[in-house]
Amino acid sequence: MQTNFTQHYWHLRNHSEMKWNRTLILSVKLFHTSTVLHKIIPKSLKGKSKSSQDWLTRQLNDPYVKLAHQEQFRARSAFKLMEIDDRYKILQYGQVVVECGASPGAWTQVAVSRVNSLPNDKYKRQGLIIGIDLHTIHSLPGAIFLGGRDFTKQITQQQVLDILQGQKIDVVLSDMAPNASGTKKLDHENIISLAYAAFRFAVENSADDATFLCKIWAGFKDKDLVNDMKKFYGSVKTVKPPSSRSNSSEIFLLGRKFLGIKR
Image: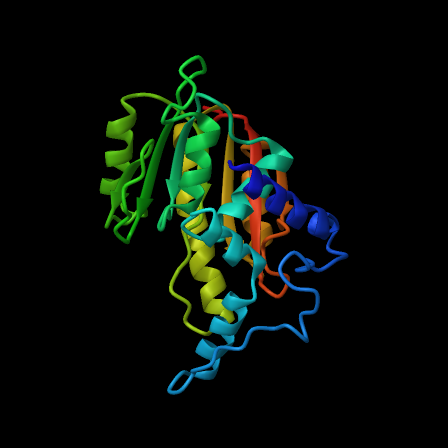
């Protein structure tokens, strides 16, 4: 990354360091000194719904959105994976990574660099990244994308396995999310269902000591998934990275040290 990016990124990290303990809200002083006096309000919102107005205003005032645009990340979500990986070291050179819900490719951009799948360093092991999404994904050097495919379908999972040609997976990432219905209970159940699809695939195809990371929206079924993960992973944590908005129910479940399947 560029020096300029490094300075901005660590400025954000320093201001949000204690958010891991959920005691501070991310400071946005990097971009303006007062969120009240200097908040950007879109000039023309005619015909927009209240939710659209709120979303646009939030985007315009979000430091991670600005930094993602500046550094040519495809989405602000790149920083979520960066922060989780900086803390837990889940991505390593030479790893095989399967990313579920890869569009638009922001997590993939981070992973390509960190597993050396391009490869940028010919003296280090080269990784492999396969990304899958219902939507079309614009190509990215160092990644294999299966766009327009439903990961929950067996035929899609078989396509992934065909590419792997017997290789076991070191990291399964899931950023899959359903279209929001507006009903929290239903949305929670749907995203848990997607997380389970990725989890089952990880259990069936992971290497020893592998990692599983999935996004969910917090709710009443969290404990069931966590308990099931504990049967197959030596360590299971609930993670809320600093760049995840404080008013969002979004959390990440991280399983490390895959134990394998007892047969």
